[in-house]
Image (cartoon, rainbow over all chains, first blue to last red; front, top):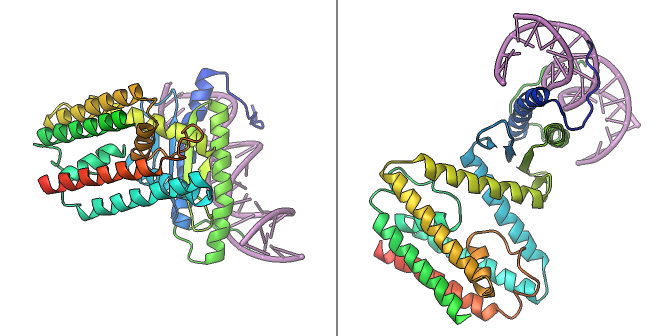
Length: 159
Length: 159
DNA sequence: TACGCTATGCTTAGGCG
DNA sequence: GCGCCTAAGCATAGCGT
């Protein structure tokens, strides 16, 4: 049977759909590879499917996280720049202060504890830490988490 | 001149590279559209290029954020489940405590300040806040950010 | 179910306006 | 720089294994 024009709709046949997904997934990632190489851009892709036990993350979980955090940073920055009313000023102030804190964090980079806490706070996951950093830090970590809890409670009571 | 096989390397010619990027970007997004429709999967893609003033987010910033948060949730869950060694215990403890703090945060949901701070800390952006929350809170916010700074400094000095 | 094969449709490099 | 055009090269549907 000759190949016909693809009907661009949900493929109801289970095995056909699974096959198409497998093939097109690899095709898509190949295209992503190519445009990244040819143009030297930064990109990532995430796909959830019933056919993979885990989400498919291209090019890698680590690089994807970097792209995502860059995106988050930029989009919130753009938003704060666009706003000029009272609320906008508050947003800008928040951005600036957070940047200041981030800068201080960088200065303290040798402090492993701060590093751990920060990654935790920002939800970046704990993959970027040097090997062994998490060892022997249980006490310190739980101590500082209690500190955060107290901070939240204070915020609650004061607010 | 007949079309030749593409050399899969960085295109040094500026205009050619820009052209290729424009074309392949649209091609890539079309492919993403197609696989999503054909197989009904959930996916997103982010691309940073010198040719776009803003990052290109497919299918939309909102849907991308949903996919990203789903990925984050799943990956941290998988990580904590997979690990069984000393470092794994530490990770699990971190996860649990952070969940606890998150739960407490939910209990305090009526506290607008806590909500603002939390969203800020987690880098979720400030878009999900109810209207007007950010108004008249400048003083409170900067106060609490100073609190965070002090916390980081303590972490530094103690570490 | 996944993979290899091949014909066919689609993508896109190169050229032009 | 962008969009159109055409043909060369690629992706992939349908089938067999």
